[in-house]
Length: 314
Image 1 (cartoon, helix red, strand yellow):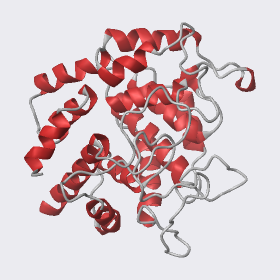
Image 2: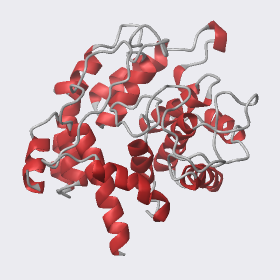
Image 3: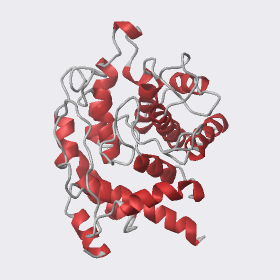
Image 4: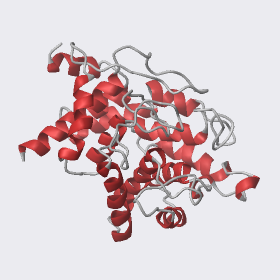
């Protein structure tokens, strides 16, 4: 396939794919992009997820459910990644039910959903959701800023461990970036975010700092960081790291050269990328089959490579 043929193939997908292709790869005008993005609430994957919300405001039985990707946290994260317009009537109605009813239960003093719980890997994602859907929690932000470790990242096992985790760090970085995008630049947030980004970059997004060897399999999840998944859930991989840096406006320097080569080498002869893996767990539905050409991975890979090419051209 030529690049144009791959783009046409992407545009044959769900509205959640189409609007992002129009915006990020085609640079369509804002009105056209907005009209396509509006369909996320009423058609395809986005509409199916919104319809799955229970009367009590939660999805999948609660704010977070062990070994499930169908909970409120996971569903709202996916809706954010699909690009559900937070100003749409459908989004406002769904979020109103979450705010009215969803809380973290007796172990966390029944704190409302957007105020988070105790683990930074969860709270980073909750902060991102609150910022995106119009309810940023300053107390949650302050907690995360106070939990940053000396090496620049975060870890759900702290304070027992003072070594940061790629998984937790990327989740918190997503929250900090979303907070600044929604609320404006904040010096303390920017400084914490830059330290977290430096944590990833110093390790070339996939290497041990102490040995400089590639981390082939994540100790906690058992996943390979070279295998690209979507949704990523809380499980770090190299493509997620690169896509975050792109969205954060980071300059693509030689520290991302090796990860970019991984993305380039995984491109198939027809110009598309495969869905390498799907993280196991209860889910609402599967968007794409594992082992086949993936619109999500192709979109994310192409815009990462475009970001790198723009940096190189400067």
